Length: 306
Length: 260
Image (cartoon, rainbow over all chains, first blue to last red; front, side, top):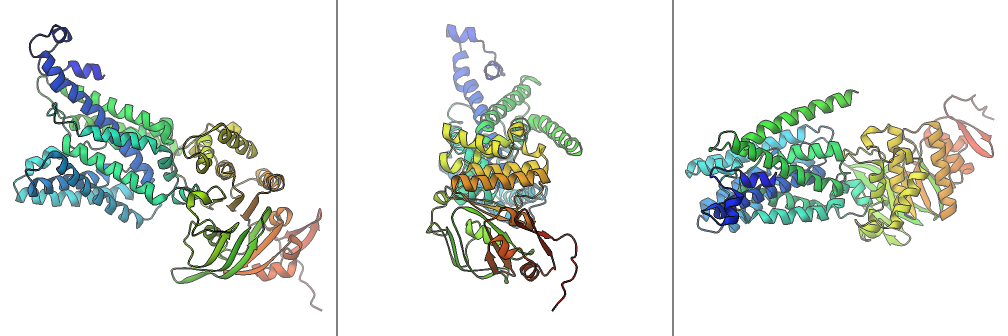
């Protein structure tokens, strides 16, 4: 699928031409197609892993960065960065966005402590509300400062603007995903709750913070570079969990591949359907993702009845 | 041995434990009994550092539970709580495997696999080892959790109502296996049991709690008798002797004792 993604695009490009060194084909491949494909793979894999880790930390299958206020907080942070320090580098903006994402997620976890544990659906509802409030604050400031169109770009993921030099921050998410994999056992144990974690000698707070930072920073990087992709971190981990179970040592590689594959597929569809124009990947993923999610929800119901 | 000295505990202003001091010896089965709300579960979670200690001191083989690093303690002492609502989708083999985490920290060795196999064997879980926890019955799940705690292979194992959800066959089997393990490897089990007859038949020591205080402590014969039980549970229970063990007929009201 990655190969297909390399071949498809608005401008005509053939491998033969690249090898013969003709025209702009090599430039297109190196400057646009390869960065785009890599960006999609990195984003898809790391968002799926983030969702998986987040669901383990909160012990709730409906939590992911866009249902917990993390993505909105990162957007707000980015807005603050753009408004106050418009001239700084992307890296500094990313750091500010990541800081806000961590703060927002922390707030979400604090609220979570006060919710009754037997109401699993309450958790994402509260998260969506928190995200709505933070998003409203961001919209208000964006409106005041005439930055609304930026906010639109950050909250809907889109890969058409990805060129060489504009996606490299995403490698950071790749690094975080690897750390996530190394900590896989710890996150799996966290998924069994605080008591089991302590019994097994886990430093509960330290692991919670590690996960929190992985999820928040990954989200912030994605928001800063390509824009948020809602529900990717929700649907992919749920599918993997249904098939593989929640032992993250086994589930993380699957989530990474499935996340990257799903995003690639949606991107290719988005690019092909109305050539040479594009439909944003967030839209395609929203349509396909919500259908899969409904199927999962209904499937679970019949499973429970049986 | 586990030494508990002057432990008091309050939750939201209500006193749960008040000035409890007792010593649980090394090796054998110690049963904690007492009415609902006597503080049994709280005492267990204090010993296992799941609840922060408010007053008093608890040591396990001389190591203070509040000062010892949690991963070091995890190799000495394990606990199974009463309610194990695990939402994660894990297979039985995965779950039991995680019991080895304190020893291998993510890199299981051949020795770890042997322990997992033994624990699965002990709880008769081999046919179920590939099944997910949410596909099991309550009793099967309970056995899987006990197997996980056993795989942790600690000197001290605290079990809060391990017989929950078990049928007669598996309840008796579990107590027999625990007894064997205690005798063969010198492990210490501290278990909360509601069926007093399991305590009478399998425990080496019975600790009776009432209203957050230590009521009495002794052999099954010393505790499981009509006057003592009446005092602890505020219930008149006839006690017979069956197979050398005291046996409480707690299901039915006995003939009243004639006061002389």
